Amino acid sequence: MKIGYPCINEALDCRSSRTFRLASYSEERLIETVEQNLSCLRRILEYNVQHGLLFFRLTSDLVPFASHEINQYNWQEHFKMTFRRLGSYIKNNNMRISMHPDQFVVLNSPNEKTVRNSIAELVYQGSILDLMELDTTAKLQIHGGGAYGDKPSAMQRFAEVYHNHLPAAVKARLCVENDDRTYTLQDCLQLHELTGMPVIFDNLHHECVNNGEPMREAVEMAAATWQSEKDGILMMDYSSQAPNERRGKHVQSIEEQLFHDFLAETEGLDMDIMLEIKDKQASALKARDMARSLGRLEV
Image (tube, rainbow, N blue to C red; front, side, top):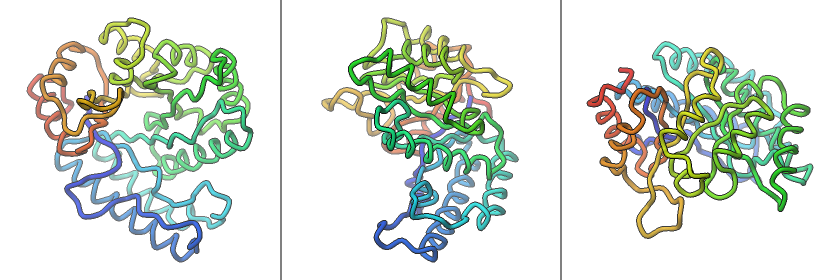
């Protein structure tokens, strides 16, 4: 098992998601910003290795406006060696990497422009992982999208876009995650049947909306969609409900007893856990210690 957190390390004085306004776009500003973002990313990765946090989600904003038509600069070539060095560091330290495009990536939208923009964003994010020369166990995770009043048709539309419009390099990395409102684990399993995509499991979303599956059984069902040779082991997102907040809102800091109970309930199941908890690395360090004490941690 690997434990990780997404995008931002609050113990460091930098962020790898610096950006700027579209109106002030220039190639000079783009290059400067990407240099800063990749430099910070290196620092975050080094922190994670030093602290035994070997699962990390890269920010979608490493390269500002990368999928926007305004950006015609060949940043891939400019930063090729930097990405390759980052990838070597990741591989040499046995880390696992994922990316999670924002909610505007909707493959089953009836709006053709939304679908085109979604594909462009997935191509950009997949290219980051390709430039790092990471294998296909490094994943892109998205949600099922909307139901649009007819979920079966929406799911067929997703499958049609997947098969007919996504490049092979994106399909090799794409996963679908159950959400907290529309697409249950069972819906995602249907999308898996239609496309072959692995299912990323989110425990809090499952608690919000499900088809009655107990937690361990749900984890097992999601894990069965992963082919270890090309996909690696199950990736899952873990959080718990923030008290007195809307359903599905992530807690500020890890509830240690709840996480302990989850680890106990899933004893013997192999997975890498991304903590979607507000205080980022602080909770990840606690989770690392707990998983280690239960003999679940890889290191």
